[in-house]
Amino acid sequence: MARSSPGFLIVGKVSRPHGIAGEIKVQLAPEYAGILDEVERVYLNDAEHPHRILSRRPHQGGTLLRLERIATRTAAEAVRGARVIVRTQDLPELPPGEYYAHQLLGLRVVRESGEELGRISEVLRTGSNDVYVVKTGVGELLLPALESVIREIDLDAGTMKVIVPEGLE
Image (cartoon, rainbow, N blue to C red; front, side, top):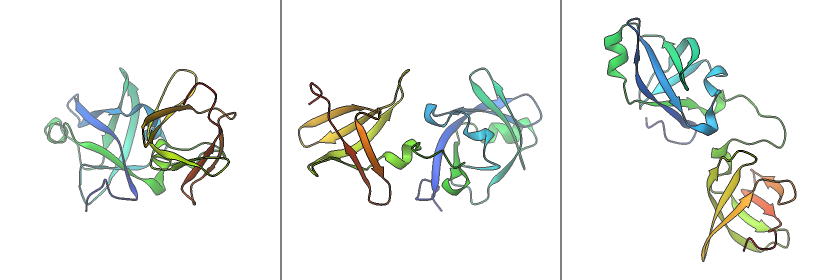
């Protein structure tokens, strides 16, 4: 079963083994920083069986994990470069009004009047607020993730209602 399918989310990559007891260093995608503190198990690549997380700790910009069934440096070396995947149902619930990036990708972006502008193709993380990249019929539109711009997100309907500030079109 491919773990990039619906219900699964690639959150990072195994960069290297750490030490001799099977620990691995994981580099997470920026939007999923800290996610491994919240989940109990991960999949590596397309493995059928999850690995229970036995321990986790931050280390030099990444996270060190000790996983069930990986107890030696040789076993850790064997998963170097593996994609780290979690089930979306295992992700912690976010407060109302907050969303994971994967939930927003592909949403139809419409003005409050109902005019469709395009679809969200990327979520950019910036220092102050996220920016949503909307693929339109004529290029890209960059929308800041501000309450004054993003009026409503309806995941069930697959839409995001917006007010486009002057000068952005």
